Each structure stands twice: as C-alpha cells, then as structure tokens.
Image 1 (cartoon, rainbow, N blue to C red):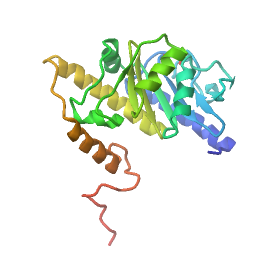
Image 2: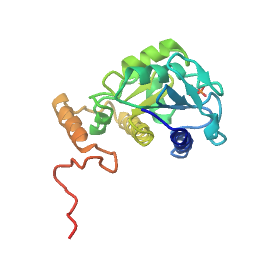
Image 3: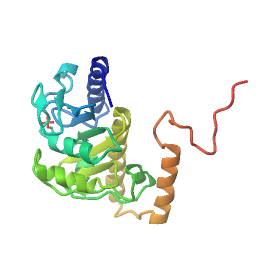
Length: 233
Ligand code: 13P
C-alpha cells in the first residue's frame, strides 16, 4: 500500500467521519471507543481521551508497528490495534466500542452462540468473548487476538466489542450488526436460553454469506447466484 499526502488527508477525514457515525448510530459515546486503519508504513489511530465531536483530521495519530508515534498521545488501546493489524493481513481496519448490548453480554462473559443465523457474519458459529484484562495492556491484546481467531469480531470481557473490516464502512457495519445481534440475544434470553442452529446449517449460512458478500452493499463482485442485474436494452 502506498499513499500520497492527498490520500492520507482523505483517509484522516474518512476516519473522523466514521468516528462521528459510531456516535450517531448509538454504538459509542463520550471518550469510549477507538479506531485504526492500516497505512503504507504503519497505521493511523484515534488519539486517547478526545471526544469524537471535537476531534479533527489532524488529531489522528500516525503509529509504526514498533509503537513509536507522531502527534498526540495515541489511544490507550494501541497495542491491540497494532497486534491485530500485524496478525491479520486479511483486514485493514480495527474498530472498538462499548456498545450497550454487546457490553451487557461481555459483562457476563457470554459468547454469542448461533441462536440466530446472523451470528455467522463474524465468520464462525460463535462470537467469542475474550477473557478480561486491564484496558491498555498487552494481556488484553493477547486475549483479543485469541478470541478473534478465525473471526471478524469478538466481545471483550467486562469491557466492550472489537469489529474488523477491509474498509471503514465494513468495520462500522459489522460493529452495528454485532450490537443488534447482542440486543436480540439479550432479549431472547428473557424467555430462557434459546436453541442454537446446528453446525452444518451454520456452515451453509457462512458459505452463503461469503458467496453473496452478505450485508456489504454494493455487492463487490455480483456473486448473488439467483438474482442478476438486468442487461441494458
Ligand atoms: P482511548 O480514549 O484511550 O482510546 O480509550 C477509550 C477506550 O475505549 C479504552 O478501551
């Protein structure tokens, strides 16, 4: 990946826009949450303790994978952003927030089971909850990496959630889906532990989601094998 200074300026603006959308969509508030995006030389990350409504593109911090940075003090969670971006070459964006229902489940150390087919959006039959560790520590990063194995999202015990993406748009979409799914699960639990879909059905669901790039509009390669765009006259 190579970026010109124009690309970097655009990326900074898009990150601020995404942060504001985290707040306006209701999945984040105050100084909770953080966001990072891979760049040619490292990554850009939100600064620590700066509310998104006053954050400007210049406030975003440029970090290297060795932990050195230019600009303001980076998010206290720079370790898990760095480690996930380093460990997961399949993604370029890491989004963390304390959304209400995902955090409610995380406070009870609940893994989200396949009680609903949409659990498959994170790439497996469950969305795991990482073991608790103090915020900003290497231990939290190690626990998150483990919970994210083969997954695009996880909960963080007594803390919040992490969602990953190739793009800012897809990471935000996934974080909102994880929150919606968490809300459904909390609601379903009021009637008792709901039944789960069997693994072979979840395999079909996940394969179908991959084939259709499910939920990501516009469908990047048009692989929905039933409906096709009509040819122009
Ligand atoms: P930062 O403001 O340092 O990013 O911290 C917010 C947070 O959510 C910590 O987990």
